[in-house]
Length: 391
Image 1 (cartoon, rainbow, N blue to C red):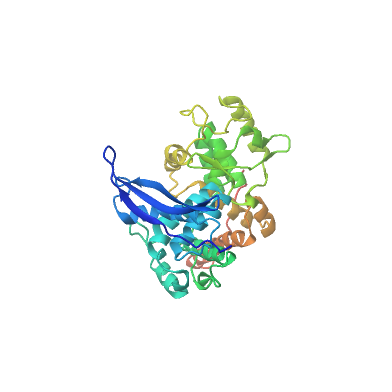
Image 2: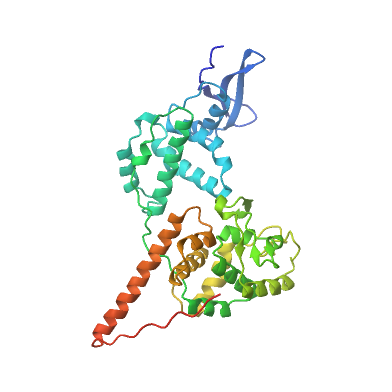
């Protein structure tokens, strides 16, 4: 039997009297051994005023129509549509949504019409070097690296299906080095913040600061996930934009130990909150009657950052600051790399090592400052006191 050829179909405007004109996609389908003519409405001209907008919407339809055919993507846009359909459903919701955004806003507009063989390493590297966000602001090294890695994953996908023989993105150089070292709280500042917060926010900060949970993992916790007897939290889900899904990586789905002081605070919070059954979120939205967790950014804006301001702490603190702070403290306390990786639930040790190196750089700056102050004082130096323990 002859292999079915890839078909592009046709996209035309259908005139309608009582409704807005609509874009229609026409194609052929095999049904019962016969070739049948089909058509499908893509959307109205109000939804897609320009042909190029309708063409973008029909990309996934073309992949669906050619499923099982001798399909080979003619350009990166078609590869992106196939990659989204096959690969993204297997990823965590937040990761999949982030990838969709990178594809729609940056990769497909720039490279979509290029054939796979026409995409060259140097051209992609030069594009990323001068890459800017939609608002015109220079993109961070981390964003550039994520786009580069996504493009590389797409070409690996193409190689698996036999649509490409090489991956030009492997030779593309980017750096994920941070533009600035993230602000973290010192042990003294962390303790002062806890005293300044009300019960709910204090429990959230204590829990996050002592476990390094990602913010989506933190707000996804339900009471059934807290094992008071074993003193651990079972991390099984993550919430992003009110959608509950899998954790970021398989390594993330590991229990995290809970400090005895955190267990005490959690017990007290469970007695105080209106939502304390096994299926209830630890930190539910009162406005949503507990059906959704709280918005973590709202907690930062209304409670945590104002508390820091009252304390005179002028640092840019976000939820990830507590995770980064834990990693830094682990390094300062001499915790070995493997143990730190397990506690932070990183997929590989390279990520932990990068954070450790940042902590080492900060220690070097402190040491240099100490010595230089001593030189200015005529050679007398004074060792800084050891940081007090934090929860």
